[in-house]
Structures are given as C-alpha cells and as structure tokens.
Length: 235
Image 1: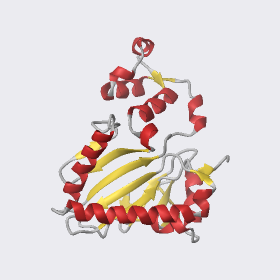
Image 2: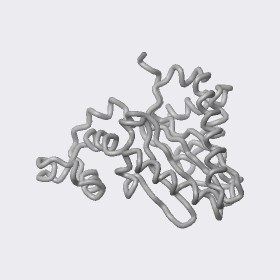
Image 3: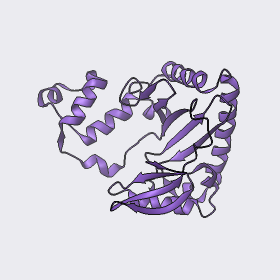
C-alpha cells in the first residue's frame, strides 16, 4: 500500500517482528543500508500493523517505469515450512496451470498437494536450484509477467537470457546496453556491501529479492527486499 511518500507493508504472521528487527538493524549503519528500504517504523492502520518505509520509486518517471523482481537463494523457503502436511487444493490447481507435468499420479488423483511439496517444486521448476536466483516478476507500462504465469518455468540459461533481454529494452528508453551497464555496476556495489556486511555474514537469507528498476530517462537502481525469513545462520 502506498500513501504519499511511503510504502506500507502489511503484517504477515510469523514474519513481521523478524523483518522489523532486520530493517532496524540495517538502518543502524550496516553496509547494506544503501541497498535496503529506509525504515520509518511500525504504524497501525485500522488495527492492522504495517512496516512503514520510504517509497524509493517515486523519483522515477512513472509513465515509463519498469521493474524486475529477482528472488535470491538456492532455496526460497524456511526448513520449518517443509513440515506442512495439510492437503491444499488451491496450490494443486495453481501448479496444474503452471506445469502439470511435475505432478505425480497420486497427486493428480487426490487433486491436492502439500505446501511443502509446492515450495519444493517451485524451486526445482525454476532456476533457483541451479543458479541461486529466479526471475519472479517483470512489470512494464504495457505488460505484467509473473512467477505464476510464463515466468514459472524459466530455468535454463537460454530462457533466463531471453527474459533479461525482454526487460532491458523495455526499461531502457532505447538504450538497453547503457541501462544494463549501470545496473551491473550497481550489482558490483551490492556484492561489495554484502561482503562487508556484519548482518549478512551472520544470517541465513531466505526468500529475499532484488528489485531492479529503470525508466526511459536513464534513471535506474536496485534494492534488496523482504527479510521476514532472514534468521541467524546455523553455521
């Protein structure tokens, strides 16, 4: 939810307080702070808690703004979530529309799958397991591609490159190479910040994303989002 200069992220059970703590720590001088949303605290709206963050996309040209969401990690779910055994018809139907070939005979007969099975298949269907990332969404002024649509099965190198080639011309205002070069430089800065970050050295980062943004004026940037599952590393 966007209000004025701020973005409000609604409370999610079992994740809200953890993400709040991570955002607070990032704001205390960690090297990753330049790549994370500026956290403004917790605010209640109609008895619902929200994380309040400065909306970092307001400076972009909204008419030509393009965004790409890249989910990080070789696993995008917490290990504790694999204990889920409840049959889920909704997840079965969603997976059936995305890639029915991965469903077993038993699952087809039951018409349901568990959340654990759903999450595992999502990682194996995409480039998550092989490359440690997957493209989960692309929004341009004229199109919206999602992780539950045509991006669900983007797994092989050629498919990834084709998807990236789609994003950059759409986002670059006729200068895709220049935009790609700027974002590549920004990725290098992100890598250096990660290597120097005390928080990330101590943490297991699960389910976080890098949001890429660019517009036709040449403005571009990237940020790391979603820290609800970030926990201290067991190692």
